[in-house]
Amino acid sequence: MTISADTSPRQRALRAALDAAADIVGADRVEIRLGPEGEPVPAAHRPNVSEFRSRDVPGVIAPRTVDEVRQVVRAFAGAGRLHPVSTGRNWGLGSAEPARDDAVVLRLDGLDRVRDLDTARGWAVVEPGVTQGGLARLLTGTDRLLNLTASSAHTSVVGNALDRGVGLRRQRVDDVLGLEVVLADGTLAHVGWWPDPERPTSVYRHGLGPSLAPLFLQSDLGVVTAAAVHLPPRAEARHVLRLSFAKQDLVPAIDRLRRWSAQGLVSGVLKVFDFTAAEFYGGAVGGFLAHVCVEGTTASAAALADVVRAEAAGLFTEEPGPPTDLIARTVAGLYAGDPALNDEVLAATLGHHADDVDRHGEGWLFFLPMVPFTGADIRHALGLLDRVLEETGVRCGATLNALGPDLVDFVVPVKFRRTAEESARAHRALDRVHELFAAAGYPPYRLDVDHADLVDRLSPDPAARDLARRLKSALDPTGTIAPGRYA
Ligand SMILES: Cc1cc2nc3c(=O)[nH]c(=O)nc-3n(C[C@H](O)[C@H](O)[C@H](O)COP(=O)(O)OP(=O)(O)OC[C@H]3O[C@@H](n4cnc5c(N)ncnc54)[C@H](O)[C@@H]3O)c2cc1C
Image (cartoon, rainbow, N blue to C red; front, side):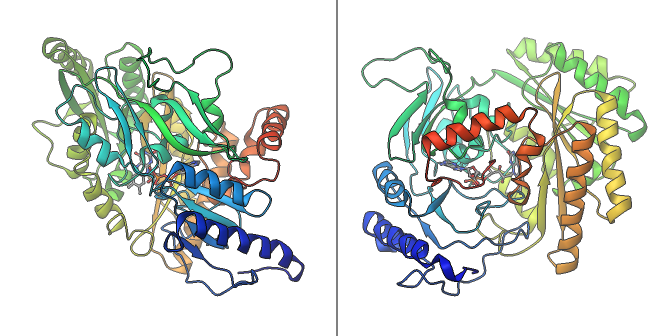
């Protein structure tokens, strides 16, 4: 830990805030990495799966109730900084690391209640420690499902949504109906739609007046202690077609997939793996494979599947029968709201269980740009990855998540052995991918902890960034919450 000689009053205040936190949440739920006068003490190295530099983290606080969170936030005002995480499994982007040094990690996985669930109206109120596996289990046998991601079943519904993660139905922000937020002065606010305990109200996220909930996504303005999330209806019937195509047919194949999306043939997020990505995740190798989900009543889903098959003829080859490959089986389960195989994919990808991937096994980085959904753009983006391979020797993967007819979440994973040399090479490749994609007009929609400062450079208008800073200084004048997060 590096602390300059003139910082000891600040360090003493921080130590006092950590002691106050121990009184609030219990000493067994606070880890203090400072001596009695706030002096640094040697701490065990905390590796993360991406080999990002471990930040200087002077402590970890793990409250269990909203009231404890409010008291901790108040205790830190002007005395220290807090980096909130839910389950802290933001693998590839920083895991539980704060963007900046000297922030105390506020772990919220101890707030783990599903506070309310209404399958008739299609919503749940969940705390940050509720995992996608846990909520999906509660929905088994109901006519609602959870929009699941391909990450571990042990990841947080709230944490992923707050970072604008992507599920198999849609981007997770579209699930967010409302948020419960602790502001820097300890105020508790419910923004967006929130259930009224006295009477049911129509589930309408925008309410009246300016929409406030989006202010707390990828945000340093508050600590989220619960979210109301929408649960989409479960389709009566579903077919997931697996359609492979060759590299030389990339442009017409992507344009054909786009057409199906634009014409409403496809349900959920249409997914395309390139051969490198499929291999990374433990799947079959060779060419490209699209997973196309069609849903509806028994008759309409069957009819749609036939339409897609007819449209696919000559350009795609359909894989016959039920899926046998791990990825294909997992994707089929995810469209159906079942994350049973997610952790098998994680183990195949990174070699370990969710609790261990940060400490052992393969290295993993993510670059996550948005790319227009056209064959020409996808070819161009894949060409940029070829250039990175030529320049750095690092082969990146690509998974395309079509979020509608116009936009693709173009997921670029970088897998590497966690030696100093390979890790340095992988990070060089990541920097290069950032540069090339930004120059091509394909900016990232999520940032890792080492690239958090790109927000200014990538924002279209400095006045908008200035507005964000004015909001920050109005709501959190002492800069207590999430320093450097998308800031
Ligand atoms: C094999 C593999 C597959 C993956 N597949 C996907 C995928 O399909 N889709 C996808 O989106 N990601 C995917 N990921 C990435 C990642 O694992 C998930 O996004 C995961 O959900 C993030 O971790 P988390 O849920 O624990 O969130 P956290 O790490 O807890 O939160 C993410 C960030 O949000 C902020 N935050 C969290 N909680 C709060 C709070 N309560 N208040 C204020 N701010 C908060 C923090 O800045 C935090 O760093 C994958 C990773 C791997 C390795």
